[in-house]
Image 1 (cartoon, rainbow, N blue to C red):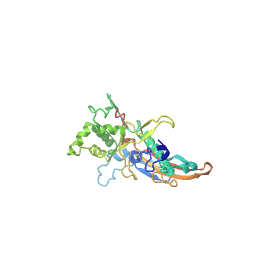
Image 2: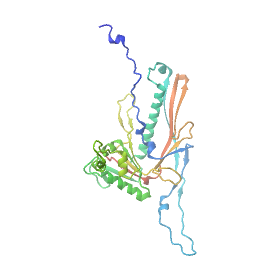
Image 3: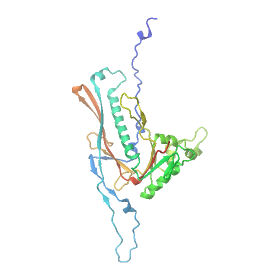
Image 4: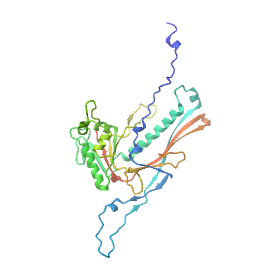
Length: 328
């Protein structure tokens, strides 16, 4: 039959929708675990105090006319940070922009693209620096059949006891430092197993009413464990090169970190770690991020370029307790 449907209608891009896999920024936790310290200089030093000097029982009875007992504490002024500048850009050629259909907004999309790349890099750097073995004073490995020093994996609902495991870890840190951990950092796959763990469900189910089943929320589990916060790393990354079949995985693996993180950073304030962000770089915000757009005339393009300058520093290995392979 003529005219045909293709004669009277030419497919055009829908102006109200487009499909892009932009990750929610809430999935990234690198900036939420440790306090962020905005700094004016790319590198500098900071002071650490010897924890043992402050925790000795050394006060003595003072006899009449005698001097009081006294002593000193040691300061190490050698620790330092260096905020490397990580960068990524996306070019927008004039010819591509001129041909772009509605609803494409190439400059906005380039900004989102660049920002996501930097967030993935920062998250991956955090995981490789802190969510791994041989960083914290205590490492515990989950196993299906644990040997000495190992734990039942929390995905083993019959034998494991995640609440006791976390409390035991908190007590180890508390006893060693005087500070009880206040945050638990989990990979998404670990949290997925915990929400169905019978021990946890049993602790929250009594709050349910008709039509309102008990919800295993991060806030509820944090209260049970006397923590300020549970953070779940749910950001993903693609390890495959361009044009190769995608290979996506969670950046934070099957691990957990129990740690004390200073609620308010300041002088003489311990923390498992700090993030030093170079806000002194022209145009950077408090997290060391800046986005620039500038002309590259010889290529007839505009470049959207992002930079993020930071250094994630371990401050005290004694303030963390790490679980690896904690679920199957």
